[in-house]
Structure formats: structure tokens, C-alpha cells
Length: 320
Image (cartoon, rainbow, N blue to C red; front, side):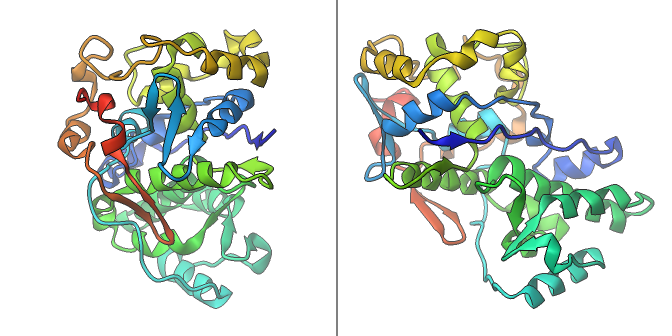
């Protein structure tokens, strides 16, 4: 059985930087609270994932996590430039980039290869005095790197983040121009594909996105949701374990049986209709890209390139 880390929520931030978080597109994902992982359900979903099609195979048909789900569940921008660029593995290059953007650099003990420990970014963030635009931008960049390591691109340790993302944050005004949502989805696809291998013992990636998607699509398997008038939608299950203590003990065998017996009508093909969520709760910046969510395109995040095969899951967009 695959091990799943219980990921922590995004770090808190000073309210002074709220407008800057909105400008960069990371405000909504910063609002997500503790969404506890459920290992048995993740394992049951992995068993249904097919790497060759990038879809889950259920008795009622094929389905997948799409750009629409990323936008609605995490509140990330899904249109823009690809998240990619040159990468260098040397510590000297890492050190130079950090000196350029923060004026300080991590020691080798603060790094693990090309990964910088989240504790270094957290410590730097706590020391920054928000007395001018330069320091505010440094603070926001630290916060974004923590989001990368905790929510969007987390590795199996859950304690470090690859420094390759830092060069994309140099131009503060240009951070919003990247399609961070599609990069996050690419990492989820890659994590699911790796998890299907016989020798894989642990799964990484944006598990909050995966679990919330499953609970929305398969509501009869979900814990009791909280306030339905929250955005991003992941927060419907913030702190779910407090009120659903017994749910965490549902076994893998039970999930297998329930998915094997899945009937038409139990899977929600279009969960974001007017009857399910108030359209006025969805920010205009998110709704603005809805025409692109069904696009059949590659999802890019540096060396991680996966196919968004929406032609196989058109029922999720109200089509045949």
C-alpha cells in the first residue's frame, strides 16, 4: 500500500501582502486550510489510473482531473505561459539565484541536491521586515515557494522544493503570466503514473487536489463537507477529520468494492453547475478562462510534460 504524507496547510501570511498575492494569482490557494489526506482512498484511485490514457477507468466510464478542477478546487490560474525554462543543478547556480532575489543564500546544509528545504524559506520569510516594496516582494516570493513545496509541487519528503521555479519569480509583475494551474495538474498526472509502478512505495504531488476532486465527483464516498459557500472549493473539507473521525478508518478493500460496484448516477459528471455552487462565488479571474478548460493540450512544468486528454472525458464538460 502506498504511503501518503499528511500535508500541512499553506503557511500564514501578513495581511499587508494580500494585494500582492492577488496580483500574482496565489491568493486563493493561500486560503486553503488543513485538508487531511486519506491514504486508502488515494490507493484505490491509483489502482484505477491508466498512464496510457491519463484517465481513471470506472464501471461508468473514463474520467480525469482537468484544468476546470484545478481552477475550482485550488483557485489557480490555468491560462498563460508554460512553466518552464533552463535548469542548472550546481549549488553555485542555486546560490547565485538566491543572492540575486533575496540578498542571502542557503548553506549546503539547507539544501538537498537541487532542492531547498522549506525551513530555509520559512526562516527567511519570518525575518523580512515589510517596510518597502522590495521587501514585500521578497516576502511574497518566499510564501509562493512554500506553496510550491506544500500544495502544488511537493516531493515525497514534503520538506523541500526545487529551486528551478525561482527564476520564474524574478519579474514580480510577470508571475501572474504563467499557467501555474496546468503545471500543478502535470505534476499530479506524473505522480499518479509513477504510483502505478510495482516498485513505488510512496506518492507525492498535489494530493489535496486529487482527494477533493474524488469527494466532489463521488459524494457518497466523501466526508461531511463544511460550508458550501467557500472558495476555493478545497476548503469545503477543511478540518474534515474533526467531525468524521471514523471515516479515516475506511479500508482499501471497502473502497475497492465500492468502486467496483459503481452505478450510473453515483458519479457526478458536471459538479460545478449553478445548482451545485453559486456562480457568484467564483471570482471573475477564474471564470474568465472557462472556455479553455476543455482544451486538448500538453500540460507543461519543466521536464514534466503530460497530456490533457479531454477528448476522452467530454461528459465532464456536458458533452457526449
